[in-house]
Amino acid sequence: MTVLGREDIVRIRTLEPERIAQRLQERARAPRRTAPARPLLILAADHPARGALAAGARPTAMADRGELVARLVTALARPGVDGFLGTADLVEELTLLGALEGKIVLGSMNRGGLAGAAFELDDRFTGYDAAGIAAAGLDGGKMLLRLDGEDPSSVRTLEACAHAVDALAERRLIALVEPFLTERVGGRVRTVLTPEAVMTAIGIASGLGRTSAYTWLKVPVVDDMERVMAASPLPALLLGGEVPADPDAALAGWARALALPTVAGLVVGRTLLFPPGDDVAAAVDAAVGLL
Image (cartoon, rainbow, N blue to C red; front, side, top):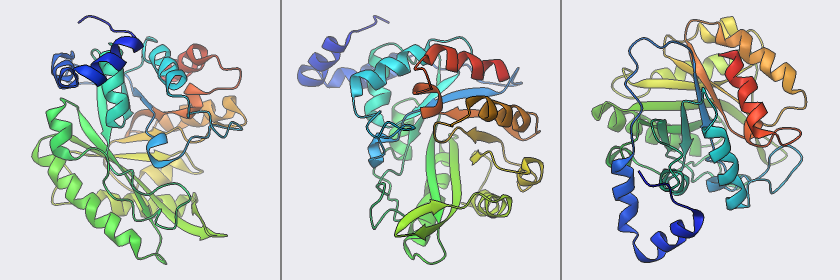
């Protein structure tokens, strides 16, 4: 496949948008994994689609699309990076740039719960749906499931995620569910990251839909991960989360959790794309070293 530049992408979007679907079909797929040699490392960049642009102390770190894509291209080219998780705009651009050849690609599905909005927990499916994920030749879809017992919006998101799990399973595609219990503090949504809360969220997510055969979990690293991960037999990817104040401590936490039997790898975004010192390649290589 011919690798394009950013000027070519603008021209294609303007004059030949039908070529985007063609490029997606031409993209080399990741080989089917039968006996994983090591845990996976997936890069994530679906944050801008829900209005979340901050990374660490930089409130608009992800606002410059050219810079974000350049960091993703650098990161995806590092040895040991297995795939990408993002919205259609980024999946398409990275495909046109040739950065997703041979990679696992997961489409981000529910982006309607905009960061800081009153309707944040009514997290509607405004991104990919299962049909679009299949048509684009992706490997699965990711959905965020935030649950607040005081907010009626949560049950609508819960129902929508259950339908998405079913629709992906019908197509034999991975349904990657990221569940959290949440509460509002000062009017803002805050995730509850106690081991008990994460275990409860995992139990709810594991029971979604009429089959769990294709369901994977995306979970945060919290205290007592051995007990937390015993809450479900489903494969799980560890969530990278916010840019940590202490990157070494974050790496150590990932390393301990990666040793657990149901942990299948990492899904990391801002921590690797906007690391302290801005050396993306070194940050990615350090994460690969854990695997």
